[in-house]
Length: 346
Image (tube, rainbow, N blue to C red; front, top):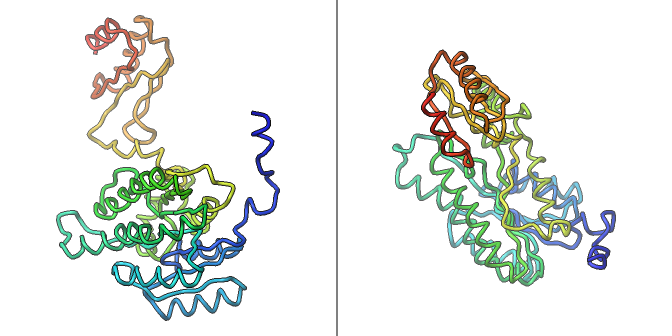
């Protein structure tokens, strides 16, 4: 074991935290998260190819990147079209000599409307852009990634694909599917030394969210639900993407990593509204009331194996919630006779 440990690469060694000599394809790389990823990878030494539907915008970015000394090339491409995806991969194959180290599936869009109002055309467009394009690119890029000997696929997913939300059903569907695709490819292609991971952002300050965040009430709702108290920046996503491409992350695969300011762990509080008065959840030797700021909160510290302390706890609950209790959750290892006694008292 000691010998194995000593064979590891030192943190400060050259190459472990860089991408010199690596080749990368980043889809949708002229704005927002995609642009940040292109610039992050290029700054770390990678040769990057990207694509955009907008020729003028792509041309402007190419000039900027050339002026900064980045090795970036680009193609005009609509990734919702199968033939254009195939053409893009032919260009990448020629550009990088048939080998690709990194594939970042970043392209994605959203249509915000209630589920019942989506047309068949809108459904097909979102599926083709967000899901089919990523799946197909992985398929046709597989030989290039395998030839690299250490391929890394990164999907830009979303917190919407990890938790339930109140809108954007189709968008969330595509991102949830991306997260599952990540896990399957990680297992199936591990034998080819190809890793697959997803990065799931919350609200990030990009053109995709600009219109919504311009509404100050909406922005305040987002910020108030985020433990770090702000929206994210594109560079905070690209930093993780870059790490997942580096030699220092070669044992990480099949993961969906949320970059969300902690919002995923605050999601449980969102379900509470005026119709929910209280709950008591015995957990170890603690009992918690409703999430903070919504519906009230009560705490009690007691030894739940003692019925006299249960009595005391329930008297406190009755006082706090005016004698009404909607939900009682008993811990899994509670003794049956204790649980029955508690329910009778409730």
